[in-house]
Length: 121
Image (cartoon, rainbow, N blue to C red; front, side, top):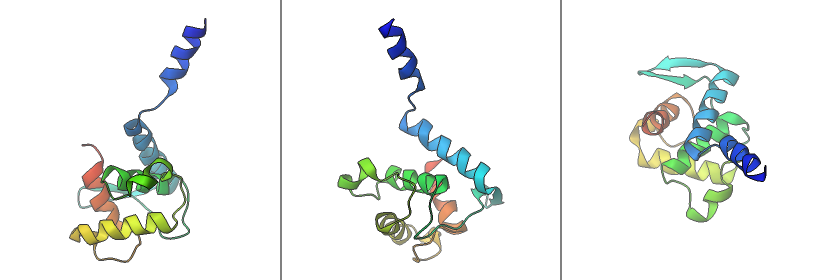
C-alpha cells in the first residue's frame, strides 16, 4: 500500500522542464499573448516589484540560461521580481544584444530573446 502511495505521489512531481512549461502556459493564460517576430509572447512588461507566474517563467528562463549565481539557484524561482531577478535580467540584457538595451525591464525584446533561447528546445 505504501509503495502505491509513493508511486502515485512520484507521478505528480513535475520535472524542472515540466514546471517551467507550466509557468509558460499559466503566464500566457493569465496575461494574454501577442505574436512578435515568430513567437507568441506574454502581453506583460515585468520590472522590480512585479510578481506572479510570469515572473516565475522569467526566473526559470534566467536559471536555464545560467545567469543566476549558483548559490541563489535553489530559491530563485519564487515569483517575486526583486534585486536578484533584476541583476539576472540586466546580466541577460548585457550578454544578448537582441534584448533591446539594458534597462532591467522585461518587455517584448527581452521576452522574445528569452523565449527563443529557452522554450521548445
